[in-house]
Amino acid sequence: MPELIPLRRGEILFDKNRFGNLRFINYIEELTGQVNTATSATGEITTQLAQNLQSIARINELEKKQLKTIKITADYTAKPYDQVVGNNTGRINVTTPINPKVNDIFNVKRKSAAINVIGTIDGKINKCINVKGYNMKLLYDGDEWIEV
Image (tube, rainbow, N blue to C red; front, side):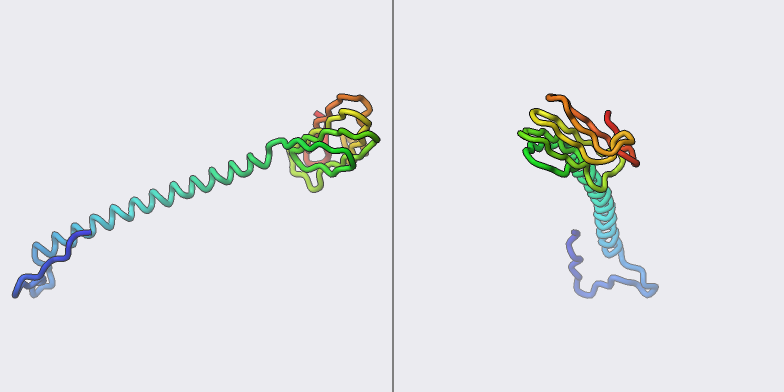
């Protein structure tokens, strides 16, 4: 910030037409130049902040879409992006995610006993994983879950 103009004894800053003297005009120009520079920098900072917030939102959305391994031994309702691994000793049910969005996915892996996958899959109600070691990857297409 420019220093304040020290008034000189008897100095008149404005003439009779209300124009400032040269020292006053230089002070105002210096002050205005600094304000304009600061305003420009503020606009750049605001733009950068908006871009950063968009990036953070995208990162948060991507983090939600990472597969999470869930080991189960009893009935379970899957969530989008679950990697469900059944270590069950008897037959259990895995229910498809509730209120899925288009392109949500989840996987069901049978390691031991049979797993019933509950929901509409490829036009059929429910599907059983009878083969040990079988992995069922399901994608929501907007109408139903499809095995991919």
